[in-house]
Length: 465
Ligand code: HEM
Image (tube, rainbow, N blue to C red; front, side, top):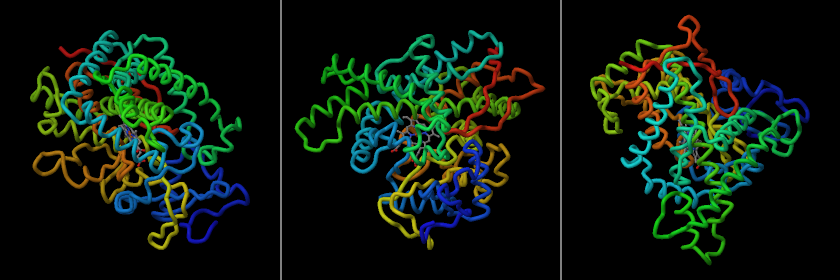
């Protein structure tokens, strides 16, 4: 163990701490490690240090105050093998900075956090509700339709088109994406050491068909856009990117390359589809488990909106809806380890040395389950986000960092929040959400791969009278 690193469990020769716990049980294992070693500890994966940082204050201090140092991505499976250090989520330095600035400005133009996007989302949500209605109150698994619907919002923004639920090619792509997310795990040695990822025991090669299909799909979309490009009619993200490339023709060392465009589109597509639809699945589970909360939400929505069209302007009038979603996100804890970061240079903090290039996890889980911030953290209690004036605000809301914090913070947060809010209200307006078997509710235990996922479950969506 190199000098100055935060402490950690005893290492074995060569393998270090490999095999200390099952990757799928990482969340619980890290809670124990934090109890034993405190807010900073290191696991050695072979000879590579992986540093874990817990606690809201430390995470904020390092990711926000020292954001310039901690905003790079380390060399791991996703950055090296999948992204090849291009795109948005896994690039670093100017390859990341310029693209992030462009992505933020462009997505804002297309309505991120603005009114015009709401109409588009509500239309997509209503298509989904019509699809749900076809089941006529019978129990079914919402996963596939939900994912397609959420994905369609991001597809409209980047490709300028949506896909039908029955579209075979798109359905196949969604299935492949599920497989990719099931095999990847940030705690696998093959994730930390991309060099060994092709060894069969890690199953990472199962990701290859998805990566190939995704690259082909995105490649076709970009080619189509290039063929039909009209700089006076910029319809979506790809068009905007092609225009930017044109405006920068001749620029030396440009980061606006075709590879970068394909990478960014892939990241938007992957990050924008799974996370939000997964959170919505958790929301349905909590509605089934807490019927009294569901009734309260429904009563509030009926009172404020009836069957009227929801918009983000209704958020202040529906504080419990926002509080419910925050509590779902806190309990669902879909990215407990966050995405990995690294440091640009050796950095000393609280007597510990964070060596340049180390893999670092700023543990979202440590904040979302911190009893100092969220008393009785294992209790599902949306009311915790409601202040004495009945508003959804206060310290707990500020510290809900499910989207992380600092310069690398989730770029899709405004979109995700809109989707969650509008979807939940529409479901509550149109359906009673009931379990398949009231005597045997689906489990609230998740399994961790990249994301914390519930077991497959069925739900009955009964049309409200
Ligand atoms: C409930 C939904 C979501 C959650 C909980 C979530 C959470 C996160 C987290 C924790 C990160 C890592 C931040 C870090 O490295 O410090 C991230 C990154 C990212 N997310 Fe999200 N996300 C969600 C939805 C979305 C959506 C809808 C989009 C699509 C627009 C999106 C796009 C991205 C991108 C592009 C990054 C990489 C940012 C960068 O590296 O600069 N996310 N997200």
